[in-house]
Length: 199
Image (tube, rainbow, N blue to C red; front, top):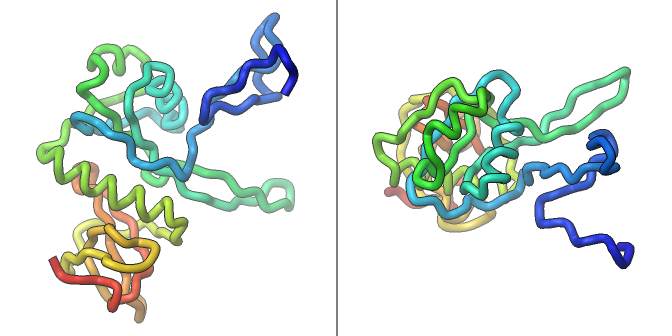
């Protein structure tokens, strides 16, 4: 780092593609896919317009509003080359602390179609916490049909320790369903049944 260059805040990366007139390369904040769930007084969900999840995350970041954007690694092919990128796990949704920002300020970004308030904020907090643990453990997650019946369990050992979910048998394997009930979405994670205890 040069003597007159200031250290960049955590989570901010220099983007050579983005130029700000007269200022050279701009400092572009990039969502961290392994981020832990931050503390928030009251979690809510913003239903954003198509492909606006990361742009809205940058707004919350600049406002210093706690938020959570679950990201998952996806591979695609461009001109015959395999390219991996982190994309929103639940397309169209980002979670934020509604107590830390005015509703109108969020809507005035023109990136949000609707704000969803949680009927049970503590349940949403628990579901997001379990999801953040699973994503932080870098386990393979798959989108799953919401509402599949099964037994609710707590993972007590292994990389998913502390995660609550619904244990099911799927395609010959034990799997854990992690639900975000408020938005009607769920993902599926592999789990060993001897690592779980019933709730």
